[in-house]
Length: 123
Image (cartoon, rainbow, N blue to C red; front, side, top):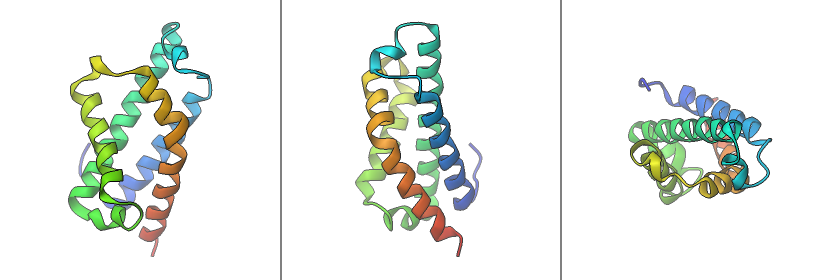
């Protein structure tokens, strides 16, 4: 990912979250990712977007961490960035249950935080 400004990265993250949420609609439980080729494609495509979100957050954190820390503490962002590392370097260890939980339980909260951070860039 090339170096973009903070606003562009936040917009990319928001678009990625919305795309993941759309792709996740067909997944009712973690086993749905593993039951057939379509499920595996969803797991792969969602994981790639989660990785991209983590990469974008990592880039923002390096150059403009205050934008993120004004919305949530450092450890919140750190956990997302660390998951990006898992996807990038240990994809074979990806657990469909973890991806399911992130999509089901965490993405709405992240989306809200990104919207707040993005609003701070509008001024």
